[in-house]
Length: 287
Length: 339
Image 1 (tube, rainbow over the protein chains, first blue to last red):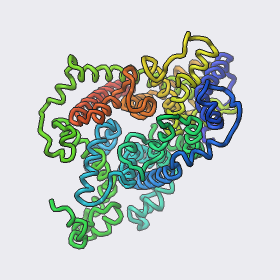
Image 2: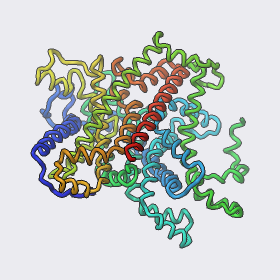
Image 3: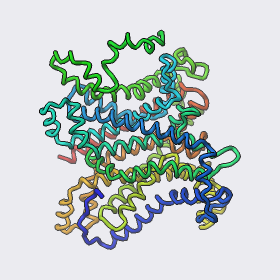
Image 4: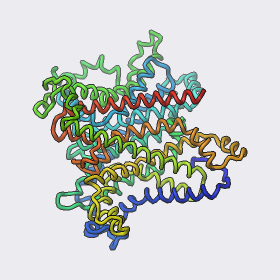
């Protein structure tokens, strides 16, 4: 792992026991809901409507089959993938350009730009939800470009959600890349973009991966705008999972199975790439 | 405005329109003549930030401005189709929102107070758990990587999935929490309701901590990697024990990171919409009526968007004041401590 091995010093027993107890408690706290999700997803429906059982009386994989029929989960999955991948790709690209400018150039308005972009992180989503909705509808009426209810509208919305943090972190990361590298490329006749693509981007890969992970997670998890800005055909998982609770029955076992299925891509990606996230944060944002 | 012309005749608009293209590369290529000024290089940073700037304008800045305009209008469902024609109401929406003797203002104030209490508890514990785990995981020991992966899982899970799991655990009849507290430990005389009534506040806080403390851990772990080993080694030679090292090396070194971390956690928690919305559905119980869901309900259930916008603007002003004060105070203490 990326963290360096600290010289194994003899620790006093008080420290060792504190570590054992605190980490065990935190581990239980973190693991409990995950265990509930996993075990519930393997129970038949009658076992989850009654008293909670720590251990499934009978195991079944049935919920994992049923989830695809109860609601059009595959369809929502596809929507979420398209929206999240596109938003991530575009967000990373836009953030690379902007952070390259911020880290390598002195230009008038740079301070205002960074402050403005960062402060948008502070806006309550609820403040611009309705105006944005109205703007999208009006753009649709005026130009015929349907943003409201479309994936495109969701994509550009989500990409701006991760943009401020991405620019901030990537700019910090690029600061740590020696300027001599891209100045040499400029001297060799590369344009600024050549220097960016041939020198800076390859050197900034850990930071870029970290930003991409963050952007993807942001888009994959978003609920508020997804519930207002989508319709039946563009609905994402964040909204679609509600379909498992009807007014007669709540299919808890299927809800848990579906939650697990939709979580696997992000959790796997995050755990595989968290090394980069820590490196990216270390070199970039946290200084 | 005659709408369709701009899209149907691209050839006419093309001459002037393709300068600031969506990508800096394309824009720059078309601007060769500018070089005659000798400021070709000077335009580069602006072209690089242009896409980010345009997107931020479209999604954040302009809607915010529109939101502020809307807060001065009487924007009920009669005017939603053509909101430009909605009558101006001056500061009426604000007056209603801050009139704490009338029901609307009173409810808003209540919701604000609940949100403050919720934020203090959730941020406090998230930070506490994060710093404790980060410090205790500094040494390498067997299973550390695995434990770190486990700790990170709540943060990596999509927020709606985590909140749905908790909603299930907090169910009255078939939830785990009541099963443990009532059936197994016999701590309560009858099963409690966790998603309605006063307990819903506790539920909110717990779920929020569960979800956010790994982020604190992640940031603090990253921050600790920047503390040079030599500092620990030198202090160990001087005879400092591990607790003293934590107090005199780790904590002071983490100060700048803590300042940013707490601010970020504060803003996220205060604005949090996802947790209450997924946990309670459309109608939050009074004890769990966080400000963002309160405004959402005030806007979308009563269709009074002018009043909802006024509340949002007040919320933004509050966050702005808190943030600037916080930054001013922390940067001053940072300066004085550096002297």
